[in-house]
Image (cartoon, rainbow, N blue to C red; front, side, top):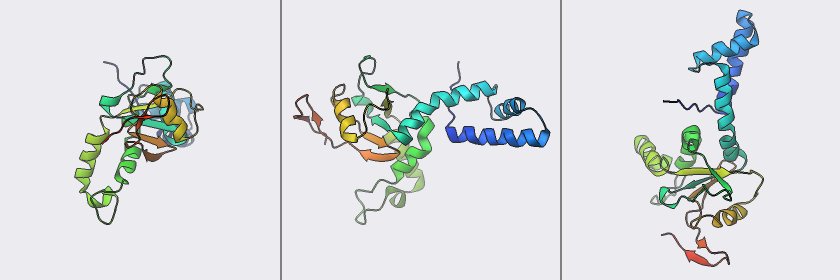
Length: 196
């Protein structure tokens, strides 16, 4: 069984800092400090760390600087089509789980008369459970070419060419945009479906 490594850019920075500190403290070559640091973090070598980080970079970039889209499992679009503008990122939830949780927890509680975020109205264990249930099964996508669109409207128009339903959520530069209530439109811009 092949192991999948996910390592965010901020973790890479911390590992590099440790290696630099170790290099100075032990007076060893930089490459040796990187190898020791990688092994201490559970990797076979530094090359494996670098490969894992490189695989994660497009996902993180989509979340922080562009668009990351989340679809309900029943509404996932066909990305096998070469013309699809989206790429499925099966490990996005695992990689971005902490950041996604912050977005989830900041949503307003629709049942709270004071309109507080759900992080203030739910028990922490319930909040974590609901997050896992609600978002853990989502399918996450990013644009194949990050410069394809610059606005949510352009994004939704592009996606509508390959998917009946718009995404459930869009993360635009790290901010949650709820697109769930957006109607499904045909090529003429006419409403052909509304979620309830």
